[in-house]
Length: 295
Ligand SMILES: Cc1cc2nc3c(=O)[nH]c(=O)nc-3n(C[C@H](O)[C@H](O)[C@H](O)COP(=O)(O)OP(=O)(O)OC[C@H]3O[C@@H](n4cnc5c(N)ncnc54)[C@H](O)[C@@H]3O)c2cc1C
Image (tube, rainbow, N blue to C red):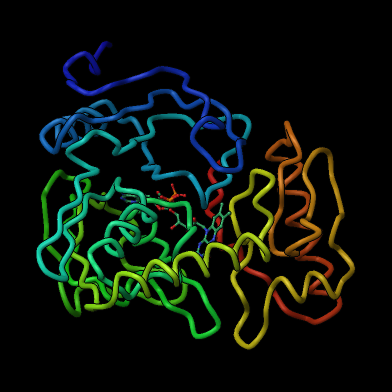
């Protein structure tokens, strides 16, 4: 059944997802669909529903571990220009879900708009950063903090606008999973161009020094348990540098698992299990994954 022929956007078959994840891990998916615009996305959803094809949405793939066996069904990727638009009016940005978070922050800084510099260097899209409520820093600055409005499409292709109390954000969590994020309105603080650019440089250099950027990864594997740093707990178990296959616990940041080339999803899963087991045995703390595991 060639149902996909009705779509205007790009579609590829058996697309390997390692090309679309920062871990560089992941087997093929049945259909990799890049809808051209909102109408095309609506059509894609109705066809997927009609033909009972399960699907997932991927942003920059920077918080997912995809099985080497791949995924049954479709993966939707919002990269067409109508999903990556970014415009500013005063201190308000209107951004498509596919816009890179980094672009949003640096374009805001050029306009002397401030508030999110701490998130510089997070390699996700606006959509992924909303779902995950991406954040950073000791006092936690989270992406949800200054979001005014989010436009979503539910799985029945209805478009809804969520504002105020309809939006719920907590530590690496939001109420935006289970829908497709289309766009968002972000409110920045009025700031100073030079200061904003300086803060971005400072945070990027902090990341470079504290995180393992030399190897593919998905950032922090585990959430920090209340009152603890997952990285410090793993480090205290002496696990830095532990390797299984081509995957290793980073020597620089114990909450990062790195792909030293051709690591399998199984290698990473085994290291995740090892870190969980050691931390449980030593501290009686259950580490919970921050990354999304697709298998
Ligand atoms: C080197 C490195 C450093 C990192 N540092 C940080 C950090 O400091 N703080 C932090 O919070 N995170 C960090 N991360 C993790 C990651 O970058 C963030 O979670 C990011 O927000 C994920 O965005 P993404 O577009 O890559 O989402 P993906 O990984 O593609 O997806 C994540 C989730 O969002 C969903 N999703 C994505 N787009 C949409 C959409 N349009 N509609 C509906 N659902 C969608 C996916 O289905 C999935 O469930 C880091 C990752 C790396 C590799």
